[in-house]
Length: 193
Image (cartoon, rainbow, N blue to C red; front, side, top):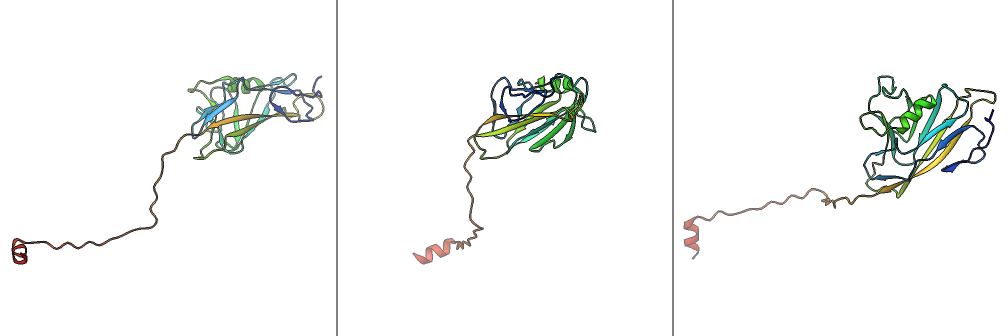
């Protein structure tokens, strides 16, 4: 078995991780626009494990300042009707946990079809940082061999493009002014001449 080898492949890999779980980095740098959803699925992120078979794996995705969500076609229990992956917790938060077999997770991560279940990131701030960081951890849940559950983590940058927000004028407090106008009749005008 190769379950005890060190893995350090693409991405910014955490050190001293011994596992056969592999993460393949997105094919290009992730780039988002302020307050606009970025679809992460379909960008090349994939998982691998030589001996996991059809056992359930757990994937944890975290960002520093935006939110992550799985959108479209989830049943009442959080299972994708398209790919079978299950939302365990954190949908619409900074820390999202999903579960599924390796094939289910990879099929989900491969699809960019907006009519199906997709993984999205959005930064809702009017003044976002120039970048965020997506941290992905895949855990085999100890599905095969000895040694217990093993995992691998990787960090991927998300560049954020700001948009030009319109200026806002704020009035300090409430201002009320009373104006008195004297109505001038023809007689008043003649008498004053």
